[in-house]
Image 1 (cartoon, rainbow, N blue to C red):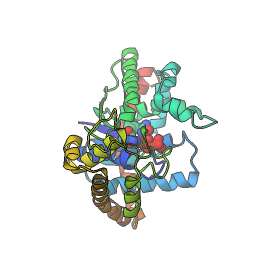
Image 2: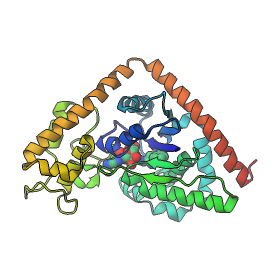
Image 3: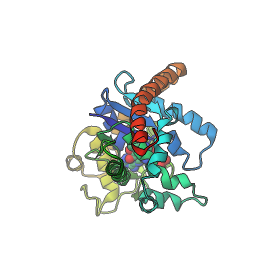
Image 4: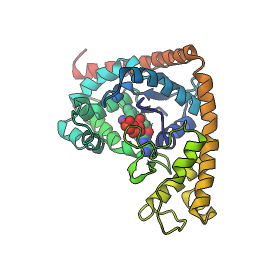
Length: 322
Ligand code: ATP
Ligand code: LTN
């Protein structure tokens, strides 16, 4: 089973990234799994070059700390493998402008900045290139990426119809719970690295005191009834999803264990603190040896290049470039 997924080095991963994506990557990693720090994607929004440079390595260390094993799977930085940008161009000649303007993430992010980069519109095509370059069967991501994955499938099918069988059509996969972790201050918006307020997002390296504070202040409702109901009680449902995902239970089971919000929030904070502590410890240890980290990442990029080179050549030949 060939697996591929990506994450932007746009800041410290939060609970949405961890529960929606990274945790399933760790659980399903195998020798045919490719995980990518998508630095080219981070250039679609404003980001300071020094910050980007540092966050590439920091995010790679965070992913190892979460449990990706360099002896099992392949982790690499996107811009170190040239075929991503190259296939992107070929696929831009297959995707249509109308399709891209319909992407919800584009509409959302473009309304938040004044000067919109053209790449914010075309970035789902680069994402399609990322995925298709590895003959990917399955893409484990959070729910927010479903529309982009559907577009990837449309592009791949159109390419195959026009130029002959070239790409594997990938499947979307998301976790049973916490596939869309919401902002703790606004349960109608997803928790996001770049958009959420500091109180709205819980980062994986937050201190125990910050975790307690953010969970205590998380928006719930006033009826006080412990019940899993996304429609009427989204704030509480979000917290129940987070608990369930860490504990390996269902949200309904979790709801039945508590009667008061206060007790539930205290137990949730404790569970999150205990679950995240070992990740921070491993991260600090990994960051003491940057040269070893860089070695892992170089090896990852070499492996990824050797696989994607073949698929890129297949696509270029099909289009008449070879
Ligand atoms: P940014 O805010 O910079 O766009 P992001 O927080 O949306 O970043 P990405 O790096 O774009 O995160 O996404 C990495 C992975 O995390 C993707 O698989 C995405 O679906 C998942 N993810 C992001 N936010 C959430 C969320 N709130 N709930 C569940 N999964 C999420
Ligand atoms: N677009 C995704 C990140 C991303 C990705 C990918 C995810 C880029 N390339 C390939 C899965 C597969 C995002 O913004 N969350």
